[in-house]
Amino acid sequence: MKKTLTIAGSDTTGGAGLQADLKTFQEYGTFGMTAITSIVTMDIDNNWSHDIDTIEPDLVKKQLNTIFSAGNPSALKTGMLGDIRTISVVKEVLTQHQPKNIVIDPVLACKGTAGILLSENAETIQTQLLPLADITTPNLIEAGILSGLGELKTMSDIEKAAVIIHGFGAKHVVIKGGRRFDDQEAIDVFYDGQTFQYLKSPIIHTNNNHGAGCTFAAAITAGLAKGLTTFEAVQTAKTFVHQAIQSGETFNAYLGHIWHGAYRDNGNHLI
Image 1 (cartoon, rainbow, N blue to C red):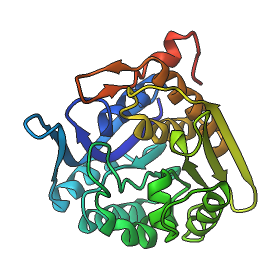
Image 2: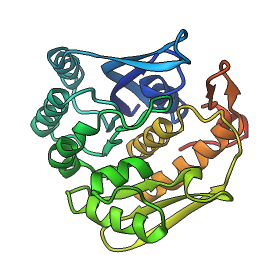
Image 3: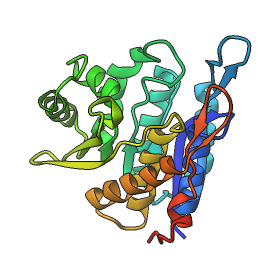
Image 4: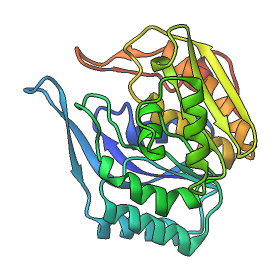
């Protein structure tokens, strides 16, 4: 059985973060492992705003040492890393063990927060993690920050951002346009350093999309672990997430989760 690893924050509602990653890994038939970097909770007395409590970097390193003591996973992803010290710890461990199939999801923004989360980490991710990445999966906001272009308003802007981010060392870049770019189609842009490819699916008008970004990166990770090419992994992840959003459920008045079992429920079989 292929082993997959997520280095990410814990979402106590179970919809995003490492919980979403583990559910996705399981659906793909891989064995998921976790190194927890932070715990995200929601304040029921403050309009369900997000609170983030980071795990000390030394403890993150202990978790990673435990995981890698059994050998390298077949693929891994990063999510919310908490602070610059944790990013440095992750870089140190990955450099030491040289695992394959590294997916960097550069989490700089979080649903439910006002503005940007942890934007001060962008430069450290650029210099320490993107050079290690087989693929990175920023959304439009994150791609604008990482590229230095700010708000990405056109397809040309997205392509320019992908080229800049690729220049930091990531072998492949997929920028998640989602429904912020077009009101009819969810468009993601994939760049391999030479050509652009565009992945499109119909917009699903729902608020039950919590965890979609984490799940997309986790699905790519599991696809790579099972032997898909990078673009094949992205294509399958796109379909997996689209169906998960279609089958999403309301969690409470503020939040709705995607359903990670939708792809299987619809009769599809992952590798």
